[in-house]
Amino acid sequence: MQRASALSDLPAAHAQHLRLPDREALRTPLSAHPPRILILYGSLRSVSYSRLLAEEAGRLLTHFGAEVRFFNPEGLPLPDAAPASHPKVRELRDLSQWSEGQVWVSPERHGAMSGIMKAQIDWIPLSVGSVRPTQGRTLAVMQVSGGSQSFNAVNQMRILGRWMRMITIPNQSSVAKAFQEFDANGRMKPSSYYDRVVDVTEELMKFTLLTRDISGYLTDRYSERKEDAEKLEQRVGLKAL
Image: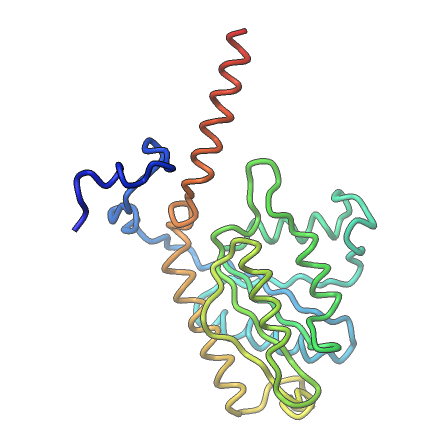
C-alpha cells in the first residue's frame, strides 16, 4: 500500500517527472497490419549456415503472419570507413527504422559473433536526431556453430540488444554442427534444433504483437523526461535574455 507521504521519502527525485504506471496506456488498440520483422545475418559465404538459418526463421515468421525483410551485408563498409550516406548504410538504417522486431543470426567465430554481424549493429546508431532506430523493438537472437553447442554469440548479441534499447525475448536458438542440420537444398532438417527455431519465431511474434503499439510508453523514462525539461528550461531562459 502506497503511503500518502511517499514523495517525502524520495528527496532526490523530481516530483513533476515521476509518473505512476498507467494501466490504460497499456491497453492501446492493436494494429491490424502484419508485424514488420527485419532479419540480419553475419556471413558472406556462398554456403552460409547463418543465412540459411535466417531464411528458415523468415519462412516461419511469414507463416505466423509477419512481413519479413532481409538485409544482405555484402558491400556494407566497415564502421567509420564510409559516411552514413553510403547506400548500404542508408538501406540498413531505413530497414531498422521500418522494423517493429528484428532477428539477429550470427555464426560463432573465435568464440564470438562474427565481425560482419558486429559491423551491421555498429552502423545502427542509438539515435538519429530525435529518432531511435532500435528502441522498443523486439529482438530474437540465434547462432550457428561448426562444433559443439555454444552460446557465446547469442549472449554477446543479447548485451548489444540491451545496449540498443531493444526488447530481447527470453528464448534463443543455438544450432551446433550446423553443417549436419541442413539438407542439400539448404533447408533445415527436422530436429530439436529446428523445434527451438519454431519456438523462437513464435515467441518473437507474440512479443512483437504485445509491445509494438505501446513501445513508446514502455520506453518512456523518468531520466529523459527530466533531461528534456531541463533543456527546454535552458532554451527558454536563453530566449529571455
